[in-house]
Image 1 (cartoon, rainbow, N blue to C red):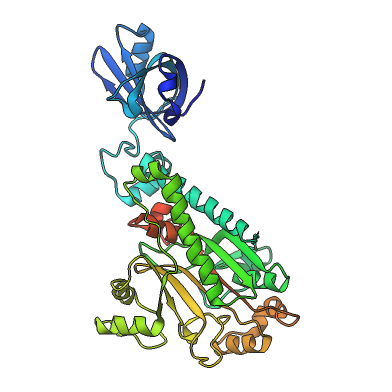
Image 2: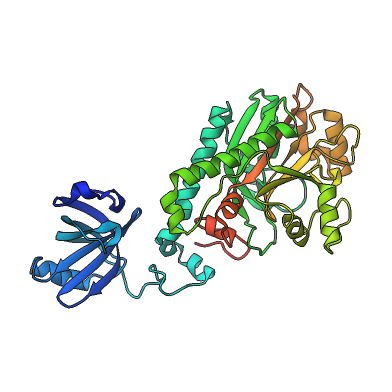
Length: 430
């Protein structure tokens, strides 16, 4: 009976099991050979005493190259010193595909490799249990997101990723040839999410790729990322902030509960944050940064150093709220009594921005005015503006970077660790 290594237990002792996997290590002690088989759930020790197993089988085992793919059938016996407390005495070892030598990357991690080398050989790097654990946790996080919003009555949607104009203006777009004309890879589903509010869907969720042609070389930026976006009608920015903080809490709870063994593989611990998250106003953040020596002109974005100074004052997750209207996209709603300040927020973990959101402008005239104030042409937003002319409800929303969340939750040193095949300024393959 085929099993994963983690599923073999005391009930199998004295019986036969069938395992499939890769040869992680070969230890030849002369009259005794050990094969360490690795599958996606862990390790199993295949023990071949020369005087016990078939002679040809013993000879075959000694010659198997590491990272070859094998099938093993054998008897399970308890062995305290072996992985998972058992060993397999094989009757059959079938080599399904033999690996070449030398290996392009050391999977046992006995020889450390730089991140670039690992990413160049990512298919090998992903064989490491420590690396696979990140993506098993990512799977649970995405499952949690869908389950959370399904419980709250959201409709999952998928908006176009090929567009004719920028979501927020600017030049941070990847142009592509679209038949006889130029198009762009979408940098956000923002305009389409808002159009769906006009359509009456009221609560929408999208989990999908975004593309940003930002010339960054940092540990927290990607040029292709997965964004988790929501838009909700008949609520303000505070309403969607509550969804965000409860979602983040729920993700931490599920990962802590369902991913204990994967967290062990990466030597990580996940603490469930308490809600509501603390709020700090933009003005307060500027004051904190200025007090510590980082001067910020009011209206400017907060520099990395400023954010690091602010992070020293707050534990865990917190919101920076009430940003200057001029520093946020044209669709952010200004306060009625203080139009220079907008109903906006960023969710932070330390100095890393996880999410950004706002109450949106839902009236046509104010939206056109804000587009012009940002030096953009309203005619470039024809389909979008039309949705505001025929009954657009008040609405709010946010976008959250999935990789940013994983980086913060697992304390990963580089966001590329949370992506199967990262895309940045230098990396287009694999």
